[in-house]
Length: 368
Length: 194
Image 1 (cartoon, each protein chain N blue to C red):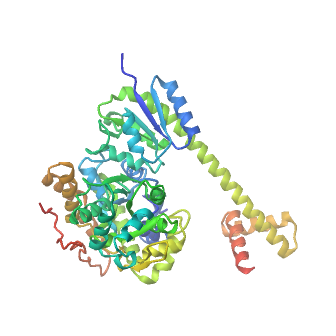
Image 2 (image 1 turned 180 degrees about the vertical axis):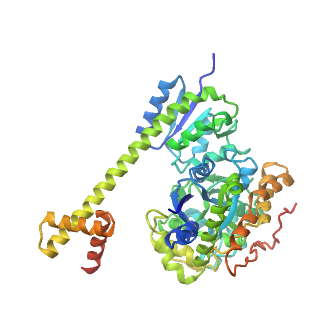
Image 3 (image 1 turned 135 degrees about the horizontal axis):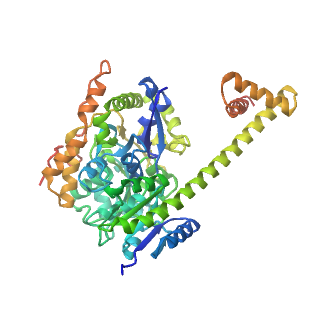
């Protein structure tokens, strides 16, 4: 009998590698069966990992880092053993904010993808501290947002009002006037457009292309004590990522993800993110974003962990060097590499997180 | 005399909240407050400055409570998910029952235990009720599909209901599948053909 490995996910398009691995049987090819459990929040998903109800989970890239810094969680150390996706975040604004942004002369259709123009228009349109929703305090959504606004002269998070809102509730928070803007994972940005709650302003990939978004998180002691089942899981997910990177797979992938037990939204809503062909406003403005979301950068880069740790430490007043060291230890590049070297012809892809929109070269050390 | 602990229950369903309050009232003397509106949850919690927050593990708004741990959080005293190394089992039980407890720093485990125990008992009951409801729903749905499949067979082959059911059951046994699975396949295929 094949071993069942319970793994938790949230209803988001970047759970795709997990869903595809099950639906196409990449798990059984590796001699185990993924048992996917849908969670309702990042914190409950993390607790499921910490208390052993699941072996692994789709996590926001900063979660294992924040746990290592003692900022969240229950103390059980976590490890990232694979990158499940890069980018795929989207920034949206309320209808009221969209009107004010248009009044500055900005065009949603033409500007989508231009981080500088979009950010300047948003800052110019604000009448008071911007209220921005993010799915979790420790997320790439928050990090990209802060980098973007700060680079354009609005110190974030200091000068903005950041609120944690669960992704499926982002559209209704926007419609209820509780938020001016959000940064969220798909399909929840597109759902806000579809329900006429707001408009899309910028893809996360326009702020820092190649930024790791979701990782496969496990308990650190598990990574050391029984690496073999994890290696099999890493290989199955890598194959799923390769399959997802083929444009021909898209229609099938959308059909898988839209099912009731997974993301549970119409396939057409999922197609927007997977094709990068996004509908931006309820007037029908649309734009194609190449590399809106990526599934092929699966190696955890320790520099990325150090970058996240440096930013968190600077913001929360922790020692940066210590934070970086603690963070690097949570990203298990070694385990990932030994797993994939067993695949004939495997060669790692170069790191794609090179330059941000404002020309900053990627470095694990923050510019002072 | 110890200060009475202030407990906030975060629960969107008022009748469930009332049941939780009731079981806590039996466990000891506490000041109980329920928040049902999830918008501005952290601000509402900050206004009341509680010692303990109880929230359903499946409540998506739980993520906003993680903010309370941050230095910039709107709460005077830091709050964290309750984990006591001496009694990690208690937290594990709570998580299995579907409740999470956020507790202010420095609250002694012995003051907390009766509260967690009461919450765990109540949430275990909720979970059982939810599972039973789901099982009943599923049974009803399966029944509907089997009835439709029987109807299709009766019409197509001119047989009576018992014969139609026997046919489904035999097919299921031959293929090593459940009667429901065979019935569902038949109904789906018939939908394509009509």
